[in-house]
Image (cartoon, rainbow, N blue to C red; front, top):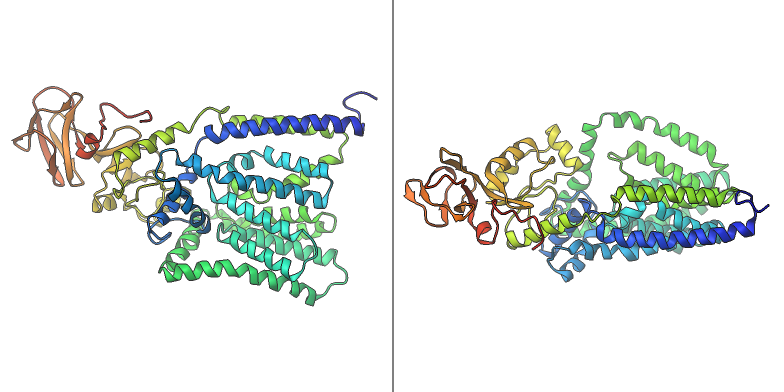
Length: 529
């Protein structure tokens, strides 16, 4: 029958070749556009700020807060130093993710080919890139990409032949590196162990404890090498307690704001029992993915789509193999592709350029502040300037501030270091800090500088000592400041000051260096320099 809905292997293979070739070209085009137009996730400059700390001789955790494992930042810091301070630095750092993405795609193909046919392997790579979380996160500069790359390298070695001592040592070494990139590797280790036990129980004959030990011990040896080196280095730097606090204590504190997490963990033994029961009828890949999903959902304190990135290649292989047995494979895959592309379009706002806001802000960072001057932001978005407040205001930090687990000392810390510049107002500032910033800072574009509007009665309150100017929309204002004629920039101490204006124009007090560097609340810098 010639109908498109009838199963005819040769014709279907031809249609699949056209479909797959078209998808490859379309995905590459969307990816190229997304690279330059897809908005920068706040995690990207956060990671880059930590890497910048290393280039400045600062020690991660001790001098710069971070709640991620350190290897990604250490590895990418030399590239940041090479590229130098520039407003569009994240495009350069996103470029480092391209080889990792290519490797993960190649590894997915090779692993799928080992278990199934070349056709399934090819479709596995396509389906992987149709998953919106993988497509979008693999573009971004983030720890997850190196983590997935190391995990896929380990899985590639693991599935490459007989489980010799040398092979298992290499697997352990790669997983140890992955652990130093992301603590989510612990989920993979547990899942691999459980999947291995299931395979050992149901498929290995004859079973031997000695053979199992000969496989596991070299892997354990390889696993501990890189984490041990990292621990020794941070202990030598005097930052080991800080590493433990940021990676473990701080992250675990989120459980206090999520009391339901303990209830979910009660279901973990039931989930494991169900997976073990089904394991004898499932493939190793399916068993591994089920164990990972159950472990992640039951034990990880804060779950997002990126936590599934390491297992998405396995999901893609399983899904591709399942579709391969269906007569209507091509129409079904086409439908999935259309749905995924629609989701990608929706997530990227149909490829609207949303990177300019960040590059504009970074232009202003580099012009409004000089190296060495502090700048208060949420979590390191301004990259090249040190933050006066230690903790970051991402999801966990905000939750812990709300619960009172960590203190809001933002105002005090900004005063102590005389921080005259801050990020713009937004929803992430804790209440006390928000009020302080609204009272003592004024917008000059995508950033704020110390200053504010002077009320009609003439009083204004300076919180941070420094050199200030009194200006109106024409330039320097005319009047008397604290009883003396005002002429130019002047040093002001903390406290209430009084300005009697000579005209009816609105006037503001402003940190003088901001004005001297071309910034004014009357002429906001909302475009790139």
